[in-house]
Length: 409
Image (cartoon, rainbow, N blue to C red; front, side):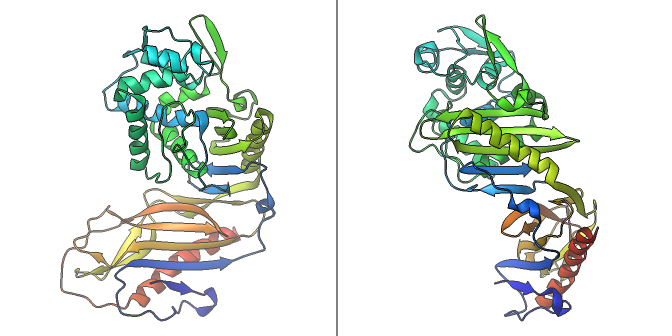
């Protein structure tokens, strides 16, 4: 069941059935400012495209972002994730030696005539070099060797890749091998590739630097990074390209300008030139067309949630850190915001517990989703019957005022 508010109704909610909402408690606010920003007329030629602001998580552009697509070598980002996690857990270190089996050499090395780091069969190579072969050179031999070292074989490693991204909340991507070579079941989405890349950027900043390395020499063979963004002087420092006949040309990239990092994904393009042009166009548009507006300060109360059977009938909700939005420069915007939680909350509720989500949308695009945390502890008490519509009216006021504030500034 849900409640909807009209800004012209002076905060009076539409009727709700019952005094408590047992399922999904949903607060929806619509604020209408000036007409849609001209920036939203931007269109990418890529069949699949996604642009993400790293810091806020704001979605600046999406096109077929949740449709399944073939990742090609962009799957190696997930391969790198697993390796980084193994390092973080202490099961591997950069000096660990990785063996190059005949299988890795034959399927991913020089005999396969694909992208390779030219590792010698039955050699042992430090993980630090294997990672450069995987990321800088897109080496299939490096990917297979990593898979065998971590999981025993590539098929098992594919299941590990899928499990690891599931743990990050990525529910649609399925991996079947470490290289990104064709497999009918191996599919990803543009949104989830961007979220995966952003997780790596934030969680493994030192290891992420490998993605920005412009060249690597192994076995006396120098290879340059295949990411065309790295040579464009636009602040790019990652991540990975991919192309297969069935996927077209794709790229996951990241760039920083004036302290702002954007993550871009494009896929399905006809050639490498179009891939580079579309990725650059999206990044430059994102940096130029948007500006950051603060919605809530660090520690500011965002709303409230109902509590069932507690000493208090409501609990204040806060985020961890400030909440900011990216909005088109110099134009009004149609925004909607909602607080979503399973309610009423059952006691006891501990201060700092994640109990809800703040979701902000710009038109049909969900631009921001951040967790909300209990601002206090509520213990069990006598049952307090409180009308849910009163709760929603108070919560709506906070969000309405915040949205009005940023759109006027």
